[in-house]
Image 1: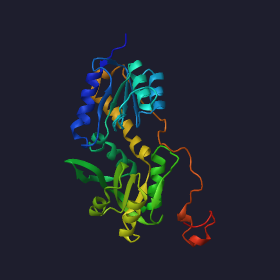
Image 2: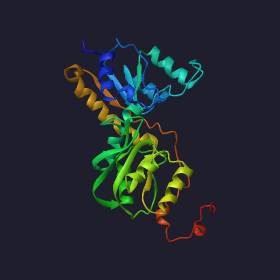
Image 3: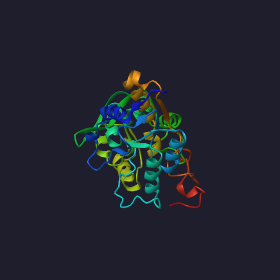
Image 4: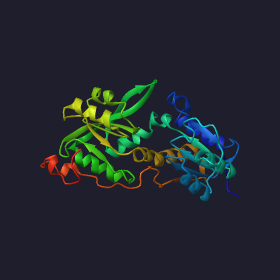
Length: 295
C-alpha cells in the first residue's frame, strides 16, 4: 500500500511558506473544501480553480488542488450547480478533492510569486519594491548588464507560458534598461513605488489604459518603461518552485507523493486580431498606418 500523508501535514508546510495572516486584508485565502484528516497522494498546482482545471485534477486522481487565486474571493450567496462556482465546489466535494489557495500571502512571501518573476527577468540584488499592510510587495533588482527593452521583453516571452495577449510594451524597443521592478498579477497601483525605486522598467500585468497612460505621461517618454506580461503568465511561474519546496520540506514523508503543475492556460482570452507592433512603425506617421484609421 502506498504511504500517504494527511492534508493537515501538507497545509502546515504551506502555511509556513505562505502564512495566511500575511495576506492582504481584502483577500480570502486558505482551505475552501477538504477534510484536514484526509490522505493526500497527489497534489495539482494551478493559477486558477477553473472548471477545466478542476476536471483535470479530478481525472488525474488528485487529492488536493493548490491554486494561487481563491475560488471564493468575492462573496457568493448560492452554491447551486447552476453557477460555475457552485458546480466547482460540488464537484470538488463529490470527488474528495481539497481546494486550497495562497494568493497575496504568496505574493509577499520570500520566496514567492514576485521572486519567480524576478528570476525570469534575470535580476540580482533583489529587494522589496514597497510595503503594503506590513508585508513586502513586489521586487526590484538589477540585471547583470544593461540590455534593450526589446530584449528584456523577448526574454520574458521565452520564460513565460504563452497566452493570447502576448506581452505589451511601452517604451522604445532599443532603450537600455538595467534596474527592473516586478509585481506578478495586477500592478497599476504601484507606479509611485516604481518611480521611488528609480526603476528603468516595470514588469507586471493588467495595466489599465488611464493609469498606464498617466504613468507614461509623467515619465515624459523616459523611464520607467512598462511591460505588461499578462496576469496568468506572470503568476504561473511560481508554481513549479512551490511544488519543489513542498516536497523538500516534507522530506521522507513525501515519498510516494506526486505533484503536478497544470499547463492549462487559464488566461480568459483566446485570440487577438489586428495587433500592431508599433516598434516597427516608428518612422511612420500614425496617419499612414493602414489598419482602419487612427484613434
